[in-house]
Length: 454
Image (cartoon, rainbow, N blue to C red; front, top):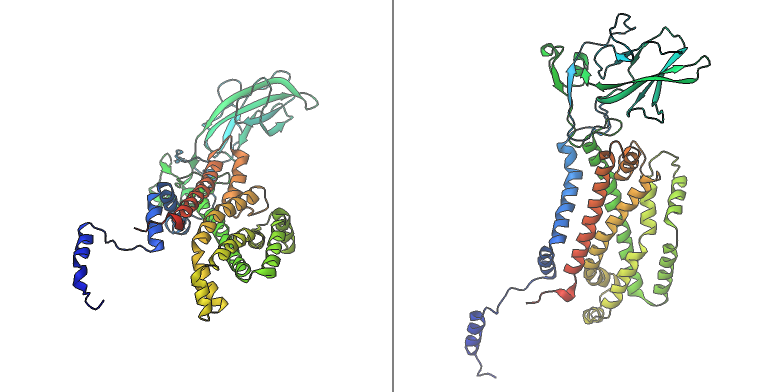
């Protein structure tokens, strides 16, 4: 053996270099990242998750609009709606115009969002008249709409509407009343297109212009811009989606981290200790699994003194943390039972390593891949739970925005203003899908059996 020198191996080394057999070794996490990048769906989902986090955290710093401020001139406006307004004089009371030309139900002047003024001639056989407003024309079913005024004086033949007017088309009807106030068959209807207007004082008050001296009656100005439109109270949808994301993702990410952390500690202790202690701990986990989440959510709301119509964010967080950890504990326990039989664990025990050192230094780090995948699957489940509870009125309550509560508000007007439901529902769907696909990709990337050892 003493006659062998390092130079004797030179041809072999040169042959290995010639064939390119010498490659740098990859760590477990480097190899996992390479395989994750090769999974296009998981990579796109990762970018979506990063984008959602930037939307939640950096979005409010860029779009500085208060989510609680109401723009009453633009209520339930979808994105891309015309936001121009005509500058008019300040409002002045109107008491009808007896010299108004025309016959039947007619406009006294151009209809604006400031006021709609109608006048009519007395209907045959009428002892009085009732005025209605509708968003749809009156058909054979005689659905006149909202009753605005009622006159039992047959000589009162004019009406001024100032009730929550906005840009759009309305249908006004005047129906004849009998001697006892009953509706007769005689009625007249008129189609009215309302134009959005504002005054110089209103434009200055809302910050639409900086100098009112340059603004004249008849000018056109643009109202505030809302990229995703407004809700039924005139609040900016983009600002509310950002504020709702903070609540939804706080629960969706915060709760899983807490109950996964507890599940990791609980499962690690049960798996490493083993024996009767392991059986007792896992039977307790089975007992927790059997507890109904919705019932405990209600009990926690009562215990924390949260009444109807109040936000139950904290009870929801507590319920998730206390009831959702057993799945993680079972998974980690199974991994620990496999790892503790490995040779390096027995070697560490022979060298005098303590139990806490073995768990923290060897076992938990070797389960990080499984824990990471568990978190990515737990996050969409928690987000969906929050959205569902808020949707049924047990989670986040208005005016605090969350994607679930916004969907609950939007479903009431989905046929007229569908954007109020589509946007929060779309964010919930994209978030849940992104985390699920990312978790699926991480599960494949962190599988040691698929590791590239070349």
